[in-house]
Length: 124
Image (cartoon, rainbow, N blue to C red):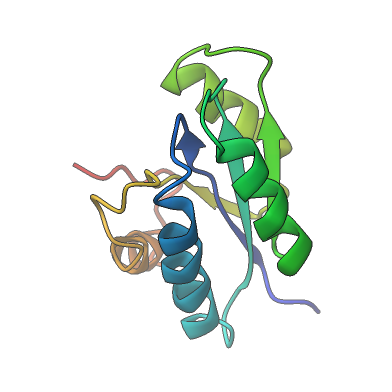
């Protein structure tokens, strides 16, 4: 039986400068969980006007775990998250911001709550 899939879904709006750092940090985090979870990253470009789309395309070409969705215009963070959740394939789905305000390691604590029986875990 395959390991469960963990999807990380960040909304992105004009994030071209931080996306490579975000990708590196989340990829390292997913690698650290490889004995318990498979991982995917599904970034939603919420109508960015910078190079976010190009950076997402480059990252997706290099990493099979990385996918992205581009919205036709800026719809806002909640709509972007909803789109990301709809495209995520994970058994477990979580969200992080691309700016790394909250490091991916916080997801480890959330996974512990999930693994102890919680169906929904919120970060504060």
